[in-house]
Length: 266
Image 1 (tube, one colour):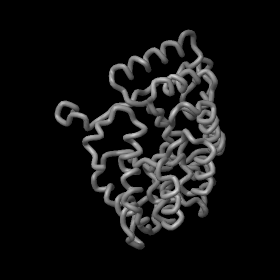
Image 2 (tube, helix red, strand yellow):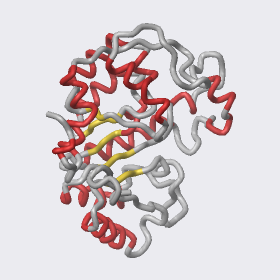
Image 3 (spheres, rainbow, N blue to C red):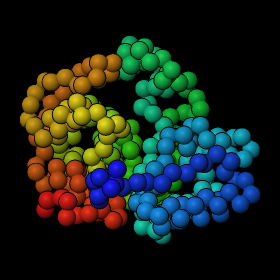
């Protein structure tokens, strides 16, 4: 792929967090991470399995802010690579399955997504663990995927961004939350324009126009591209061009090392 499209793709490394705490585990993990970066990795991607499914050497749930993992985050800071981290799932998956749950239809359609209040831990606990980890490592740059599941509470997300200056956010999979609050979301994007990155979970070209329409247009009352959640109508944020450029690529050019800036307009 990189041969056909030189300088168009970058790769982030991954880590298998299972067995953390085992003898020599952290030394081997950090050594492998350094080797991955030496071989071209431009960042570290952490999946939601950390904090939810990964188990330590004793078979216990591995918390995101577990002290045994700290050398990993410190190494990322030393290497100058960002950590793109996805923690938990939408809070609605933990909430009561009733008429007040705005993802009721999604959970009815995909019941395996529903979780008990403590499965595998309360939503709030997993999210707080993530924020604790960010605070402990101020020299490491973090990209909080899915706006940290706070796109439906931008006031709270703004407080976190103010408190944790090394935290950035990606907008993958939460465009519907932004499109239903266009005035507040527009003000938020303008205020935090240097901390927001465009993102998407999957390459589905037919879905991108919805993202562009929400971010770029002043259109009103149009549908989301999926049928099983976000059944509300959305509105365009009509963001200024300079803010759009930062969200689409300028922030990534600053945060992710080694990107070819000549491929992007000024």
